[in-house]
Image (cartoon, rainbow, N blue to C red; front, side):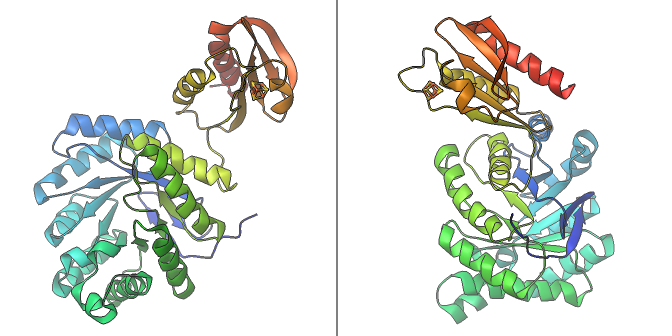
Length: 354
Ligand code: SF4
């Protein structure tokens, strides 16, 4: 059982973050924010797979006009991502954004950061202070000579104080680096001296397969030590995979149980079916199911039901037919192979009443 570090609790658009709240899963839109249709379609796709917080890049002030539209259409809290121009953060708050992520290193002007802090205080907008190793402010770089964990932590604490000085404590912090060890070190050091909730992730992790592994190592190692209140798996590709990967990480550590946990065998010479294709299709079919079930998809009838006897439901394939099993006992036999996946989906829906 993982013991989570005690952090303060904040709320982003109704979603509690920190304290004893469940660790939330977020992702980021990758469409052009000027294109309302494509952006809302992608936001809906994220919502379907369980995304609880959706971040959107706001490259210019004009882009903020999408905020009320998305909030009305999607019903998931929207976080605005702001770099360089603090006026965008001000406009986003005026438009009712649920949270602003600022990278203070790219704004690099104390008057402007203070202005963001006082408007955030006035509007009650939570802020993520998003420190990135690649954009630390010059003052910090002069002191540390090169970017690293200590420099990131000092930068984060400095900006936390700027917000505290105006009385705004609805804050969360991230300290991201694409190097896993540097990220781990920064998060460990920060959480030893501060109890603000932490958004964790490995930035620029890479394409879906290798990026998900890298993220699982980094995010998983932090979560195992009780660090992290909200997570994002950053992948180059379809953002729904970021959400799915996020839940896999949380599920693997027993921190959250959402959706269908697919147990599938690696196959061997006994397998007479294209199990990989069936599993891939099945994963897409069940991505929007919230309730938790362990479901097995096994490559042979001889060993499958026994090897996956702990599964709530399962299917095992023979040469032409398949069987459905429940907790290791046969439930239905003689199902034509091509109908087996549908039969399994039907059983899942019956079991979950959905
Ligand atoms: S369930 Fe059957 S096909 Fe799959 S790995 Fe085990 S023995 Fe091989």
